[in-house]
View 1: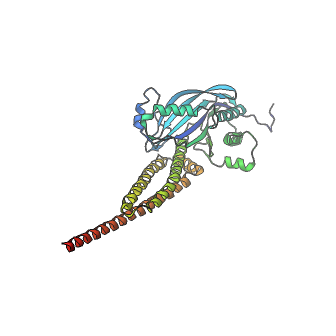
View 2: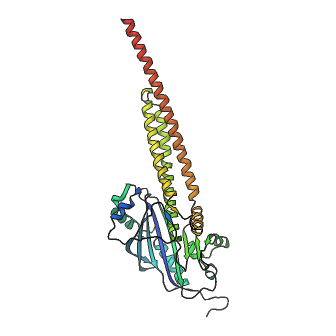
View 3: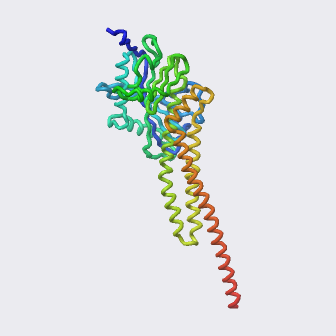
Length: 367
């Protein structure tokens, strides 16, 4: 029987655990065409909260999947989100209703373990392959980049009885936020609880790098969608950063090779390299702008704060700055090569004129 020093832990009345997987699959997704390929699937017709999307993602209910959780089969519902900037998000959700807090925490950790990306039995590869096949005609320039992100959402809608205190003081949330049931140090606990938000008085939204806990008795104000988009943006910026990391050494090699070609072919070689660099710069610039403008939550101060803090926590601004610096290198190299090609072409033209004049003089002397 609980004593004064052992308060009774609450019972979770209604909750969900959602594992999210984000995958870069193409240069772009034609969302309109994709919509025409899913007439048999329920479409989620709107997002909670005052969110403004540049191009709203297509959100679909995609059936269910069975997963072994703690030695017991559990059925989770599958959702698919297609983003126009070339990303696919898969969501696998499990209802966790009418569970004592300790059992709720244990089950959530078991689900996370069962759906880990490195778990051979996890359904991510088969689900992704199925979705890519279904929407293949809507994928523009598909790729096999292998860039992926995962994130966990623990959403609690209601407890069996009212809480006597704020959620983060009524129960120990750190096992859920860390994905680790072992006792944590005070400094680690403080770090996990650092980014805590609430719109209504009873709300408790806590965001970490890998997981978020959302207790919103009054309903989701749009936080879940904000977290999804932030993860998708992180995924795409990682992809562009890796793409430019691969492209820059090739760029330097191509530039070096133009130094060894004969003078008469140098202008065309320089122009060819310059055109390739311009294509890379233009494509990556266009797509990074799409990613950065994917979502606006500025009309709602609360969502704007959650969104901005989440992007900072994920390192998205720093990664975006790194991509911009790499793009500047590509752009400056393109400009230098273009100028060099123009100078080289002018020099070749002058040489040709001199040769023609010399030929005319020789012909005149022969006559």
